[in-house]
Image (cartoon, rainbow, N blue to C red):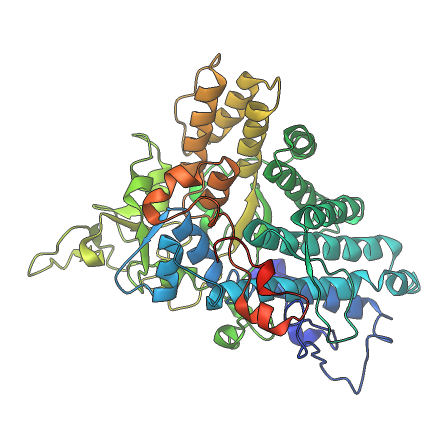
Length: 515
């Protein structure tokens, strides 16, 4: 049963926690049930520690992040998705890079991350209290594991912030006054991320340990994220060293589509997932833009992208043209003309183009005469409609990503082994359900890089990877110029105006260039 593989993330399980609304504001203190517990007496039992750690995860389950905003932001900016006419105006702004500091979902993204950070801080700053709990109530191994999770999660929230905003406030304490925190250089943010991940790894369980619970951060997830951070910083040797620690400990899913189904989560390829399970409740979904409070166990991606539902985005034609003939990932990622609608009891044939005046009973047309629609992360393999809520987890890091990042390291590092890079790319291409021809060895670094760019695009289509890839490769100015991307501006988002208004330590002078 799926719920046995989930962390119960309900915020209400946490009796009290200091939650910072953003980085700053005078309205920052939220105390749940303050008459019974306080931060001074909270950490005395394992359930209290566990509930505090669980609450950190819950901020991924917000409208500002993976419930709704994140997939629109990254897929539209990266050019994987284009908007149908009904796409909301604030989402269109991602596609054409016309957003500004008043953009609501950008503010929600910022605030969701900082709330997650402050929940993590509430655990980390109380490390001494946690370690002083009697070992009969909480073993030293479990103490280290919980603290490792908190550090991993703080690192991930800060990574989400620094790659979008650059310089941001560096907060490692629980504020005791309404005074805000100033902007810190991105170098300091990366240093904290790296130190948190390095500190987290020793205490976290490995994925194959009996004590490990699915859905929680593990040793390999922290190692993979550390490698990803080093790669973002173009520190290729350091990144490769981290990836080598987990190379061979995972495998590629034999069936590519199993990465994107409800019933096959936490498979052999999964390294870290953002968890959703509608069986645990969705009643707070639309009123939890940033807090993570309540029952938010659903992502709206299926409904938003679903061709038989809201169909707000469709796959960009440029993305479709990237696939090689015979690449089965095309059929696993998109619905196209002639496909069978598996979730339809009538098993109708899907058609594209302009429908005739009378559609045969054996057919169903993709609306708006598009040539394709999303299959990946959709529930149409088992039901007729998305019905708003989806339990399909987001694969934030999977083994294919590690393999292709290893290829990138070898391709980019001084004296790198180009044949090794090709080998990693070929591992991805040779997944049993894909089995594309192996790329030949002995190629130039330029040819290897071009092969990598292609492989990452088709492997991670609609997985919010493309925009960050283009930034890392210094290619966004060229590849996204037709969408309105301006070099020197759109590498970063604007600092939200509501943060500048509420935080006395941040002024308009701190705003990112061009905004």
